[in-house]
Image 1 (cartoon, helix red, strand yellow):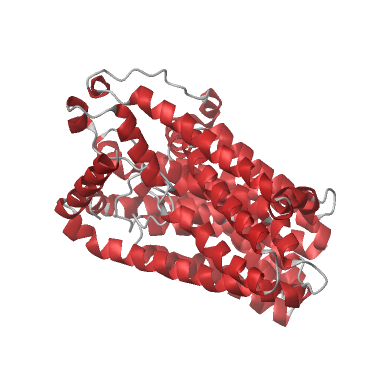
Image 2 (tube, one colour):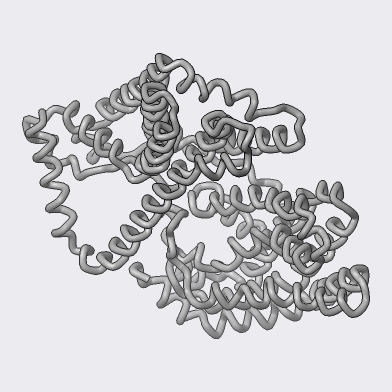
Length: 492
């Protein structure tokens, strides 16, 4: 068994160094390796300092109890993070299926290799120095060490549970929903989530025998993945025609939008069926909570330019995240779109319509911030109008300079595909211009005048949207062939 695993490792090492793309991606691999090492070292220092930080901030609380209280957020956050960036490690198994090598050994290797993932090392490198400091400060060594084993086991169980739920959108929505609900309940003291879950995780320290629970969870998750892989490793899988029942949402409601309906349907399907675009939606929804970090701080409440930044950012987060890569999202088939009898103006109208809807939704989601004062609601409203009238045409104009391809099946995190200098230039007019504009009129006149100016600029932009989109359409048409040529370069 060990010799076979060693043989697999040797073959993987040779495949890595002999790959035709090894030289091209070597610099990227070294850069990612550097960041991985940097993060692990940072976790080592932070884990070692955490005990003293908690002692200083909460002198009357037990650091172990404080950490245990917030471990439920760590579990949910790590599940979300792994859903987007971690994939099951694969190997080219077809050549082995005609050799006398059991599918069980191949499955054990694939799952065993995932246990040494860098994602699992994050919890290890964070908890290890924390445990050492605890023991040095008189905590029972046996209890602390078994708590450490429990934390590592939880990380491993998250690793294998991720493979089970990775293809389930329902699971992702459930986890994100739980994280949001727990945070809101805990923040507004409706239900003390940390106090409720704290004893569960603290039990790993107080009752050492409970370490068997996360270990059993690791074994169970591993076994479920093992049975799943064994049933699906067979040579005919590459020969059998793939037949799936297409699951499509009923998008007939988009027909009410007339000529742009087909484009809206394509965009909605693209967003929902690809992880990178779907991640933009979830990130946008999560950033609605961004205001809680500022509205609750006295030092920021009176800083109206900061509140303007929040308004533009929160109501326009999807506009920025999704809009800055228009039309690169369609890069895989953009040349086909441009060769059809499709009005380019209708194509851009559909993008503008989708972003307009997102700005409206984000504004309504930020309306509860009126709890912190009418200024927050007024600034968010003015920012939303500005985004609708000015930033949408701006983002579409800069999109005409995008010519880097995006592969939608790639991981959304750490993925720089499609990114160029254009994305950095967009920040200046989209975020900088409204903040400067508001700040000038706020300091010289009042907050009401600052909001009114934002609204006026937005309304003027809406009134002249037809003219602006006509000019932007001509810009896209003039750069049509440059964009097509750029999108064809897969290594871009």
